[in-house]
Length: 389
Picture 1 (cartoon, one colour):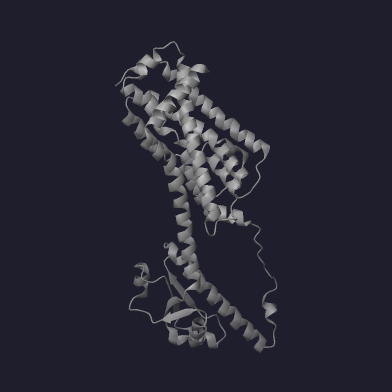
Picture 2 (cartoon, one colour; picture 1 turned 45 degrees about the vertical axis):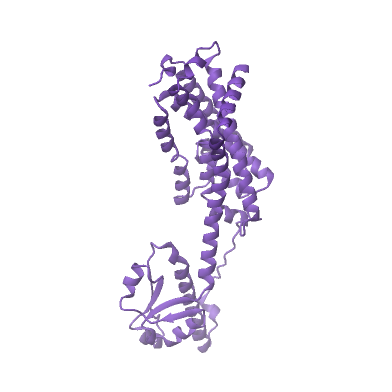
C-alpha cells in the first residue's frame, strides 16, 4: 500500500504542475455542462410559452364556407390569414406552421346536421409545429362540442345525454418527475464525466510515459507492478472524483437559481451525495478500462482514438430510454451505463431505491471494475510494456 500511495502522489504532483491541463480538466465540466443543460431548458421554456401565448397566424382555405367558425377562431387569439397560392408547399418549406382547409361540402353538411369536415394541414416531422397544431386542434374540438351542445338544447335534449361516460384525467406525477423527464439527457453528461474523468491522466501515465521512456525505470524497481498500476489508477480516480464534485456542485447552484428548475428537482446535499455514490463505480470502470487500453496500445494517439469511441458508450442507453422507455427491473441495475442512467433519474425524480437495487448496482459495478483491474494487471506484467513503439 505504501508503494501504491507513493505512486499516486507522484502522478498527482506531476499532473498539477501542468496548470493549464488541470484547469481544463477540472473546470470544463462544471462550466460547460450546467450551461448546456440550462441553456437548452431556457430555450425550450421560452419557445413553449411564446407559442402558447402569442397570436397564431392561421391560413384558412375556404374560409367563406364557414364564416361562423372563422369569427369564433378570431375571438380565440387566432389571426385568420388568406391562403397563398400553394399552402402545402409553404408548409413543406417551413414558411407556415399549420393551416386548415374547410371542405367543399362543409356548408351543405352543416345545414343537414351532418359532421362537417375541416382538415388540419401540417408537417409532422417538424417538432416546432407541434404546439401550434395542438392549439388549432383543441380549438376546433371545443368549437364542435359547443355547437353540438347547442343543437341538442335546441331539440330539448340535454347535452349530457351524448356523454354517457365522463372521462377525467388525473396526473399523479410529481413536479420533480416531470422536470426529470425533461432532463433525460442529464445522466449522459454525468456518466460521461465519470467514465472519462481520469482519461487524460490514465493515458499519460501509461502510454505517455512509455513514449517518453520513463515507464521502464519505474517498472524496473523492486515494487510490485500491481502496486504501481494501482497507484496510477488511484491518482486518476482522485482527479476524476474532484472533477465530479465540482461538476455536481455547479449543477446544484445552477438548478437552484435557474428559473423553472429551482424547487422542482431534488438538488439537496443528500441527493448530490447519492448521485456521487452512483458515479463512483463508473469512475472506477472507466479508469481501469482506459488503463487496460493504454497498456495494450503502442502510442498515446492510438489510446486517444479508442477513447473517442468509448465516448459513445454512455449515449446508447440514453437514446434507448428516450425512444423506448421501459419500467425499472432489477437486472437493469447490473448493466453498466444503463444502471447509472436509471439510478440518477430515480434520484432526480425523488423516487426511492430499494436496498436490493443498491446492492445489485454496487456489486455489479465494483465487480466489473475489479475484473478490468485484473486484466490490466496481467498486461502490466508483459515485458514489452515498457518498450516504446
